Amino acid sequence: MAETDSPPLGKYLASSDKKTRDKAVKSLAAFLSDPSRDELPKLEMAKLWKGIFYCFWMSDKPLVQQALATELAEILLSISNLSVSLAFLRGFWEAIVREWGGIDRLRMDKYYMLVRRFVNATFRLLMRNNWKSSACKDYISIISHRGGPLCPDDARLPPSLIYHIADIYLEELDKALGNPPTESPLPAPLTALLSPFFTLAARTTNNITFQRIQSSVLDPLFVAFGSPDEDEEDEDEPRSRKRPRLSVVTYDNLVSNSCSTDPKREGALETGQLRKILLRRMFDIASEQDSRDSNRRKLYAIWKSNWDDEEEGDDDDSKVVDAT
Image 1 (spheres, rainbow, N blue to C red):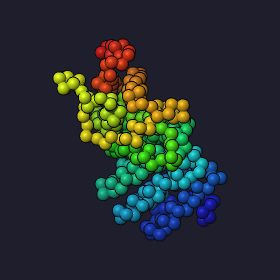
Image 2: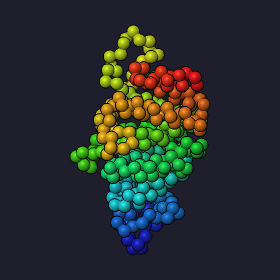
Image 3: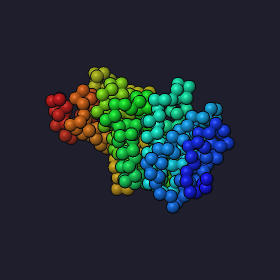
Image 4: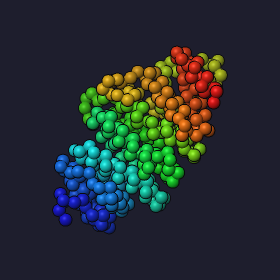
């Protein structure tokens, strides 16, 4: 089999012999990183990822698992053609969603690690391409549409996968922003990157999924982007009116280098301004017709508890919430 003519066959990737698997992975990286390479047909990509999935399945030592997880995720960045990278990413998520239910308890931790590596590599890929609007749109489609891990309309999605992505999402985005490919990286477009969680929170039928998104994404996000004088709250103010204090990391890179949707035009936005934009986006998604009534009420409550009462126009928005 010529390495440059076709991708490694699944039987080589899933071989019981480590040397054979290692050679197949290197052959795969060389094949996909060829600048003249077009996207593989969907069926071919599915077959390829089935082989990759079981290649990782066969890795049985912690250091081997860590090295392989990193090597596989770095393929995203070794591919020079962005559309091919995104096609490879789509194949990854479709394989993970498809195969997740068959992962046994003893192997689950290493697949959690693999997902973490791919989430981080994806952010670095988008950052390397200056958060190109079309690339971000394709990425959101990959994770949010049918076959993706955050699809709001697929009740068959494994909850544990959703929970893990929610748990690591902000952390890995912050890590990626802290390790930029250039000295002056463009800010991350948070409205686009976080909309899948707003939509899933608005439409999920699983209360635990909603709670996990709130505790792992929404609450830490709005605390991280809190007002500068948040620590000077009036101690006489009723506890119910105070924002929750969470023992979470501060996401310094995320806070200092993020925008709403257009990195080149907006530049890094002031935290208070961006916080209100994100709250408004969450509010708008909650207001959509497809949102579940119970979820809408909970998202409105999160919006209301985080919105500054002094902001001009708050009274009108409060009336909208109070009327629901």
